[in-house]
Image 1 (tube, rainbow over the protein chains, first blue to last red):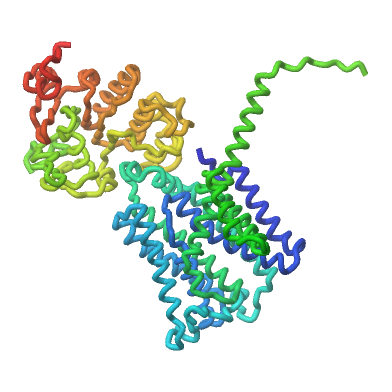
Image 2 (cartoon, chains in turn green, yellow):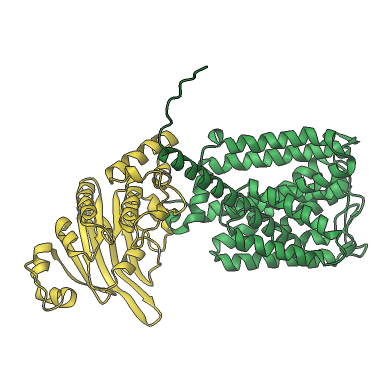
Length: 348
Length: 246
């Protein structure tokens, strides 16, 4: 049975680790390492968006990058036009969430089965990718922002303090803010999952027919879940755009969608900590393997993923949790079976 | 609407369900009185479960009308039908396999009650169905009969005024079946109940009025004793050699 958030020590441990990294990393690490960790943080938020809709709503989207890219371009275009980043950052959540709700409405109210849902999300992503790739000419501008086609949009503003467009965040401040957002998204999702809405969502994941037979509108729940996930992915896109100060159509690519699926699968579907761990582990591996000369790093990474999926089909976090519980249970059984220790009286 | 109609909880008129060239339910006119317990009998393929699914919105009938207390509900979605106060237990137990028995029942109670009351209701229903000791167990790991009882607890937790049970005794042990019979009889004091069932021993324990289906249509509608003596019913349902007196 799912523990209430307030009674789950794992929740406090995760938040504590997050706060420790948030305040400790700028002291312990150099600038390059901080920027590297910032990347992991942004991608973790993106991974959480899919972890929520897949793991807790049973919606397997093959096109999560659609919302990631939409958020990134929304932020880029609006911040270039407005000249500050607070409103564009909020818009980068709202617009993908609204688009997710609209797309979700047609998919879920149209009663698409899981397979077709996967195909539709993938096709919508490809359409965005294709369209954005063909916007290279000067006629493809929104206000002052040229979309740039396959060249992307350069010089995207760095996040500024709310209300003060000239007070840009330095890399350490940006890292702290992004860590704060990751913690907020994690806490928010944990609370949401533990709420009645979240429990019904999990019920829908487990058995849609029974959920309807209890009187719950499965379609409405799924649209809301999908919209929340889309909004979070959009926000991650904006974080990515401002972190790189550049965005190109690859934000919409299938590779970006596949990465999210792999992180969630490797870390553990149905958990929130797992996908974060998946991002850190696999991105770090990717980085390290990229420096190898003797073998293509994608081959090694692919092999590692295959082994991971075959050996730990439930993912890292659920498997480790299972081993720990089994070990603890065995230890307790052995303790109970052992004869009571004799009382020893000391001669000293 | 006539006076007689006022007392009908559910009524179907000319209800027909075709799958391509096969007519699974053929112009069925059926009515259930307020507070009545009705058993639906019939051999395999008689159309009982398809009829049941048409009532619950799991299938949209090809022709005909379904009314709940005079209100047409033909083609309504299942969750909207359930909200009218109908509790449904399907042929194959439909549960949230990854959740505990308690959580399953609580989710049902929560739709009608606030959280503290839903908790209380869930505990109450688990106890009523004799599965309190299974409260913390994952329902996906339970035996079939236990799953049936948990599902029944879920149905009861929704406090329905009409309960539709499709083969509730399937896979149950003798003790579990006796408990179920007592529960259904108790339930029928406060709600109208339709039970689709094969198990004759169970039907004898609970039934008064019985509707027999054959080839998608209503074949007989009579009290249980009459049905048991009916030669034609024996031939289509029990087989010619059946010992009906048993």
